[in-house]
Amino acid sequence: MRQIALFEQGIAPTPVVKMSGSYGENQYYIKREDMIPFSFGGNKARKAAEFYKEIKACGADIVMTYGSNSSNHCRIIANMAASMGIACHIISPEENRERLYNTRLVADFGATVETCPVTEVSGTIDRRMEAFRKEGRNPYFIMGGGHGNPGTRACVNTYREIAAYEEQTGIFFDYIFHASGTGTTQAGLVSGKLLADAEKRECGQPVREQKIVGISIARNEERGREVVRQSIEEYLGVRYDEVYRDEELIFTDEHCMGGYGKYTPEVAETIEEIMKSDGIPMDATYVGKAFHGMRRYVEAHKLQGKNILFIHTGGTPLFFDFLDRQNL
Ligand SMILES: *Cc1c(COP(=O)(O)O)cnc(C)c1O
Image 1: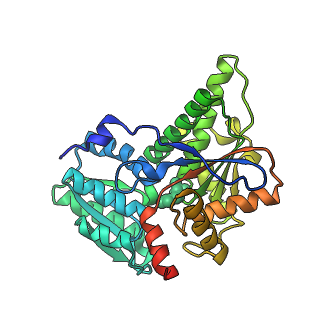
Image 2: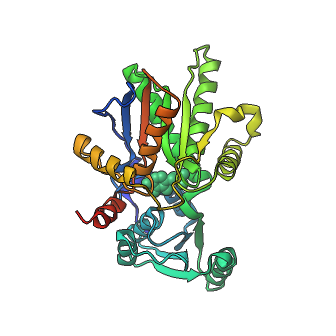
């Protein structure tokens, strides 16, 4: 098994940059998680760095995961496995037949993609894991989207970087917005905040109010919040309602626009605008959609004079799929 130098040395804090617009008379900053220097970066690269440690520790010779082979998650896991010189086996729902740049990259990395009906996914995973073990192989399984404790831990690191930035600059964020999918990123951010707040209280330092808002890109609010809650409990090992008030968990499904991958012409306009004004590419499935959702949220809640941080969670290859669709 080969090492990945970047993951060995640890990911350096990603840049936080002030944005040019002041929509709703707020100050906007963006944390460029898309600039993590592995496979176009993003939160999946950050999560992969944590899974990498687990894979190394158990000496796995094959990485197995679940997800669409056009997803950012599958691209990064396939790339990681290729870098490590180990095999990658992806179970993909056959309902998804989209061929995007990620699909091509996954194929180039040499991953095996096994499709099955979405209803048979969990059985297929179990059977395949068992078959690998019978062959004398040592498979490591990663849940779809990099869900699970290592993924959550990765996003706790993101929060730590944000807190360090606030400390260094004296700029404190009243709101943190991001695209929420499996909820792992949100669980990590909230867990990171809970841990940081607890430390502050212990040192007798004041804890400022800060809202973390997940803009759902597909899931409905009830299901979305439930998964975030479970992930926090699993990671912190405490009961959620002992450490966090339910009304503090903001997961809004008002900007799903009909589901995964769907978006309105306004999202497309926002993406073009931000690329022109700030030179930041955003995809239409996650980041552009969530950025647009954030603006709607700011408007609906009449936020003014706030410091707002938006987390750019990556997905750059999907930006090019977006361009292809726009026929520019
Ligand atoms: C996966 C993904 C998300 C969602 O992250 P979760 O941790 O699953 O909520 C957001 N943005 C991009 C670009 C992603 O690839």
